[in-house]
Length: 85
Image (cartoon, rainbow, N blue to C red; front, side):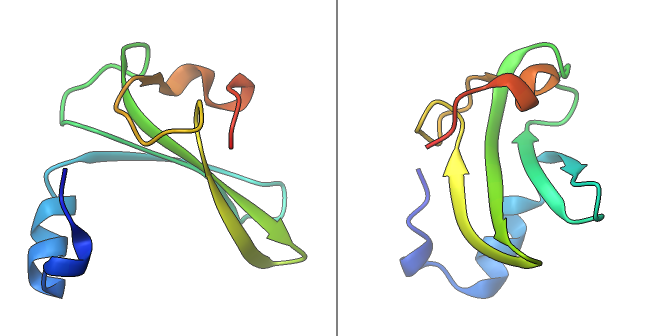
């Protein structure tokens, strides 16, 4: 696990670029779900780290994790039906 507090901005960008990203949007065009996995991962495989952004109006007020954790074990194809906390 990367401790982001100990990383520089450049290191964080390099770390994030190792992943494929998927996004799903609200009807207002705001990003609602964000998933990352290693490149080549199938969206049907249980290898995704998935988060949900919660909004008040158009302001993001919290970020929730699929199954309440940041593990790479979610299935992107199921992102809308997963439990988030």
